[in-house]
Image (cartoon, helix red, strand yellow):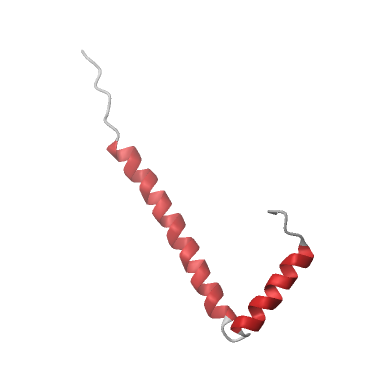
Length: 61
């Protein structure tokens, strides 16, 4: 995973815990989750727009 092993991940998590404190972690996690959800929703909407904006091929009769 991006060249980061388990010990490095634990160190990063401890640093985050020290900086933000245990009380803020649920808020931060919720905000990150909402951001990811909105990003996925926006990317799905852009795909739908792309499909609808393509000109339809008209076959001559």
